[in-house]
Length: 321
Image (cartoon, rainbow, N blue to C red; front, side):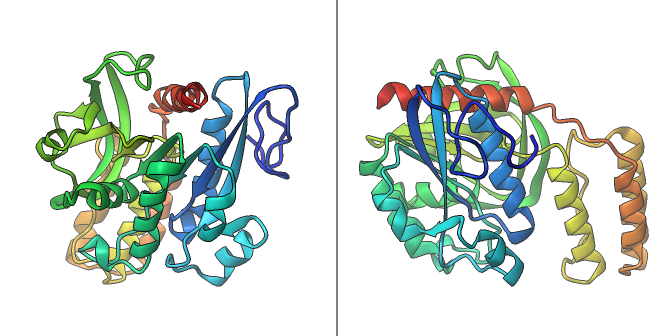
C-alpha cells in the first residue's frame, strides 16, 4: 500500500480517506516501538485493519506514551499526527492496540513508562470493547492484571514458528489448525500460570509456548506474544541490527539466525559471518552482512493468517459494541 492511497476503510487524513455509509469503528494505536520501527509498525497495523470487514469504516487514531524515549527525527515525524496518551481517554474509542517496546529493564515496573502503561491497562478494562496487547505490552498487561511475571529466556526466540489452534473461538475460527507466526522476544509467560488465572489459549507452539490468548475483563483483552503485524523483512532488519550490536561490542554473542526464516544458502552465509565475527569482531563486517541481506528475498508466510485474525478482531469489536 502506498502512503496516502485511498482505501475502503478510514484512518484519520491523510493516511486513508473517509468512506461514508458504513458503520464506524474507532481504534486507537498506542505505538511504543523503537524509532527505527515506528513508521513500519504504524503502516502494518493500518494495512491489517484495512483488510477487515468491508462493511465497516475503521478510523485509526495514533497515541504515544511520554515515557518512551524518542529521538529528534521520530518526534518530528510524530508531530501533529500522534496525540499524548492523556487524550486517549476522551477520544471516544471502541478499542485499542498497544504495541511492545524494546525492553530496557529486567523488571517491567522499572521501565520509565510503566505508570502510564499500567494506568492504560486499568482504563481499558472498563472503557473499551476490546484491547489488543502486543509482545512486551502483553507481558505488562498480564503483570498488571494478575501479577504474573515474565521469565527471561536462555536464548532469544526469533523466527517464524509453527503454532496450533487449540480453542474454538471467533478470533481464530478461520485460521485452520496450524499457522505460521513470527516471534521476536527474550522473555516468556508461563502457560500454566496463565491458564490458572483464567486466560484462554487460542494458538500455541510446542517450541515457544503461548502465541495468542484472551481474557474477558469485561473488555475482551487479546494478547499476542508474537508479531503477526510484522512485514516480510522485519526479522531480517532485527537480525542485522543485532549483528551490528555484536560487531560494535554492544552485545557479547552474535545473534542466532531467525528460525524458519532464511533459505539454506542465506542462513549458511550468515552463520559463516558469525563464525568470523567470533574470531575477530569488527564493524567492517557489517558491509558483508548488508551484502548477504540484500541478496535475500523474505517470504511473508504469516500474512494471510494475520489478515484473517485482524479481520476477526475488528468483527468482534463491531459485534460486541
